[in-house]
Image (cartoon, rainbow, N blue to C red; front, side):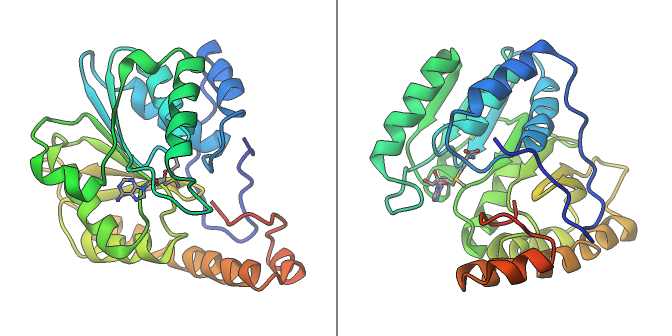
Length: 255
Ligand SMILES: C[S@@+](CC[C@H](N)C(=O)[O-])C[C@H]1O[C@@H](n2cnc3c(N)ncnc32)[C@H](O)[C@@H]1O
């Protein structure tokens, strides 16, 4: 699990300090063995948010892959139920049904399988029939504009002041366009901050409407987004030295 390095020239990110709890260290050791893209600093952010879920609460995760973030959420919140939504799409990146087996084995190994309910479905197909209140929402599913736009509608099940995190925010084109359309131009969700590409939002409570300053915080992330898109293009073209010149030494996308 790579530690998140702030890229040179990046907008400041509000990273949560690693929790000073033995449980977090243990879960980090476990999830290092699980394939995925969530960094340790991002795991800390999810950990903090999941800890705040009330007893008997519900955490919904859209996009689970091999269970890296699922294990973090379930380990952080033994008081809650975690619903993991993933159709386990095929292809070289996500691996199809073999990934489902890895997901189940990883949860079992981490001792959290009992508290995670897997819904093997596309988030967009499950949402219209969903009725339960949600206490924390994590979105890391399909990254196109249309799916992200639909996934944001899961936040309608959060209470006022409820939190959601989105991975690949200001990194993926589809996710970022969805955020511009529905968060920047909307009035229900407030952007808080990000840990790398893991962005935190809250449902604006009654009496604390989304302000111009909240919207400006989103606009301030756009240079970082353009940089990340540029780096992705360089990586696809295998122009690794050029990517290094703009501060990205890794061959993996900026997360
Ligand atoms: C980036 S991975 C998730 C990584 C995971 N959160 C982690 O930390 O390891 C994206 C996942 O989204 C899933 N996915 C693709 N389309 C989806 C959809 N429409 N609804 C829910 N999940 C979807 C893929 O099968 C894949 O497992």
